[in-house]
Length: 184
Image (tube, rainbow, N blue to C red; front, top):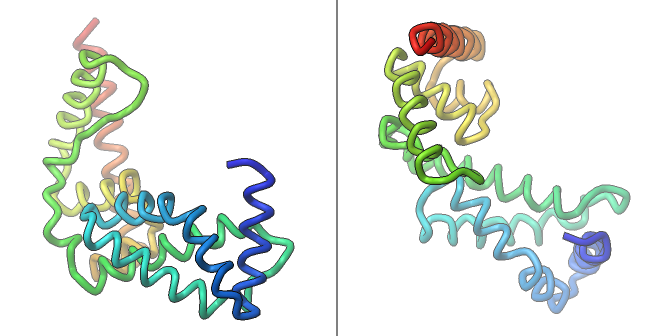
């Protein structure tokens, strides 16, 4: 995204705070695709992600008057979408239905063989974890949750979640180290 577009987003938010409906339409034209991508990455369902985007636009409309001109409007919008998606997940209780063992997609600039090997390694490392530890690792690394987000979603204290993440990371690290030693 260019600096010109970022500045235009800020201008549009300010115009929206003054009641300019055309500014809302232009803002939607510029960022709705990105908003949908963020929402979909969190809720994992296109229809639900579209609802998140609509709810986010309502929140943007209501909160535009609180937007500070000297901040990053695009980041502000992304945070609204992210929080709206998390709240939607909490409301829908979708997280409890996620099959973590099925989520080993290791994407990137790798060929199929490298990706398959990396996915297998992640799967093997995750196999040493308890279901609770798998959940917190999934939420931290795949959903980009904070400890607070995970604690709220799982009905646990922040310290319990933080310890589980630490324990899970240690188990995975130990697994990978021992795996490397046996490969030599």
